[in-house]
Length: 392
Image 1 (cartoon, rainbow, N blue to C red):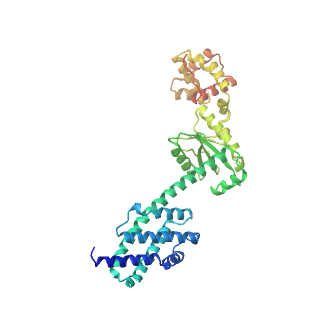
Image 2: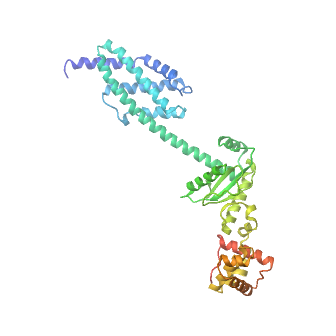
Image 3: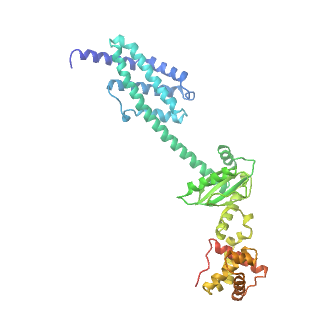
């Protein structure tokens, strides 16, 4: 080190020491932030002073080091961004506040430089370091904000899903019920319907998207969540009977008040299980399922009717399958033989023969109302999820 370099470095150290001791930087920075940067009205003065002191120290440390800082050199950004995020200060305001601090420091350097014999161009050269510091600081603060925003969004989503599930399936305390309704814009006076659908972990997001699209197309709102292996929800508005969600079976409960959602959900869950038992899809409720709901509720009856009407056909082999096909077509087409025969298709005389053979094989009477009801029941169960008849 030459004799000329030592005085220059000493002068530079004296300038930086003077900046560290300059209380005016703190005061002017706080004044500038309060006056020009939005979002700081709820930040306590003590907290603002502490962060400005950290920023001043970081800036002087960077100038003294004399090289561009890297990401790991600005840990202060995490502390500041974390504190401001919790206080609700927008990230843009945080970055503007930091730039305001550096601007004050730079101007004070220009003011003090002549007192220490340091030329302005040398001070201005240090401004590059400050702006580089600003870039690194900003990048780290933005990353922290993004992480916190994602974490907050996930936490909010988790709380929202938990409230929906509990409001639908349990008896929440009135205050908690009202709090969630206000938070998630659920009306407390208008009737609401609970809904239930099957949950598939790998497809739940897609299923929820389909429910949202169905609701939007029908002019409704739906809040959904996954609870205990089932997709549950609150439907706001009256669904049109013609609207169906894409590739979904949805059990729908009756319209009730907010407090009665668990009763609606019980009905929706029953409708969903009953629909699965008879192979019905789309939007289902107990009213539309009618007697078919009994297939799920009474497996003993289903087993009895299978034994009575299906087992004799199983023993008849392939011909028994053809006979059952004829019976099903006959019932589906309201006992209209020409239409039933055309739907299979077979000749009308073939259909009549198969119907006659059904009566002979099973001992049933297709002219008897009880037989028609029993056949409708057992054929509905055969189309659904209950155990189907098989050859023994």
